[in-house]
Image (tube, rainbow, N blue to C red; front, side, top):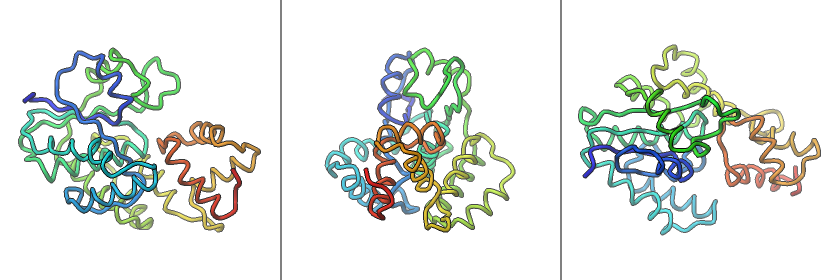
Length: 263
């Protein structure tokens, strides 16, 4: 077995990662924990069964494909690696996935064993509109590895545990209180803005809409009436959410069901 494990945030990053000279086993984290049902015990079979059912229904997938592409990789968390590298980005989608990975590592791994490192870019030199590591080639990913990789410590995992529990609970008041009370973010430098963005999703305005629903409705009401154009407008305004077409569609479908838009 290779002593090094890399956990990548998606298939797009893996394409560039294959061009690097970095050694190690790979897990591709094909999840979207920022959407759908969650429970605190990410190690349980029930957690993954609920995820499989929701993803199959929401994204027109099958539980079998989800289990093959995602759940089957989880056995690597139980293997004795010397080093684990977490490749995740600044946006909410990636930060919640990162929290899930850290929870699994803390529950399934003796953390006195492997050194756990985070590679988490919020910007990349020479990339004007950085949205994700899937934009980067092998040389750029190696540069990130060499220059911004940080080792996560006990405080980082404590912070991640608090954030995960609050995320799962979905209580806006408690999340806001925690955000205001937490003064030191250690190596989790992208977590605060991501959780602030999530707080805006938990809050409802006078129309009963959350922040994302209202932004999408506003975009639609400016005369942008096709899904691809709406995606582009939303990304340019709110890339902090890191949502792909499929996730944005779940919000557009809710607005359609309420008769607020007609696509």
